[in-house]
Length: 328
Ligand code: SF4
Image 1 (cartoon, helix red, strand yellow):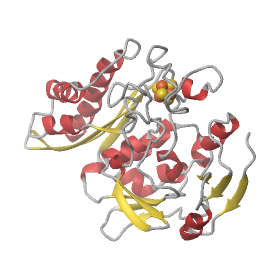
Image 2 (cartoon, rainbow, N blue to C red):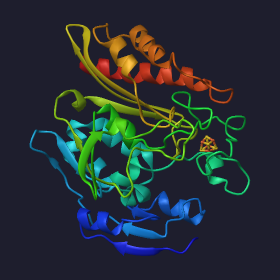
Image 3 (cartoon, rainbow, N blue to C red):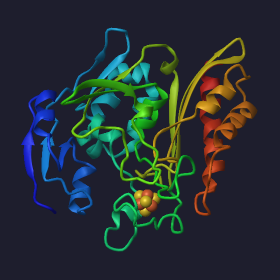
């Protein structure tokens, strides 16, 4: 491990001040960053611990929910407002990792965790453009069962590993940021950069910019929502595919729907085309499958991960049929 200094921030302004300058990283629960440091894939010279920042989980002024970036995943999943009003979020977190990891991991760290592409971690034996831009990508012609079918580039086909972020994107979450230049907010779906020819640059965050909180809008739609994750084994593993969905049916037609996919792209993938295809249709398997197909029309599967097309379509149909049945 490369030597580094450690300091603990008192509040968000203090954290931003301490992280000024090169080679500083914010430290949340450390469940991903510390692993990467052990492998010398991440080599920060200074760690600024932000676990003392806001852990608030509460109703905000407009009736939605605010979640402090330092809130632990377990606290979010177990919170009564999350369980009652945003069940897909609680289920996504519970599907994401073991209790020990959930107890450590923070919300801010979760949405910024890095891919688990095996070649990215193989510092000694594999080429990886995310680790070393311009080096090449051994996943493209290699073992790519877990890799992206949407939004990838000729430089990188990695997937984003978070389950929580898939639910948050489906829920129209906003992410609130602070830097030396001030504060700003953006839709979480806009936080992630496409890989293009610089897959090492994963977000639109500026230098030293800190995630301070997440907010979720109010509204009844999310109260009956679900998250389903398909993985290679029953114990904890990253998603082959996952689906976060909320569905509202009125007068026998889909009135509103939110849909996001995990395990298939460099980011939690909001299925805008599928949502558009579903609105106004009958809530039945044929329409659900057609909606998934509309989203997957742009997919570019590889030999090792083409099975994800069918798996994602079937999972989408299953989740939406369950939600439609819940309303019957
Ligand atoms: Fe690296 Fe991306 Fe290729 Fe994986 S898919 S080896 S992360 S460039």
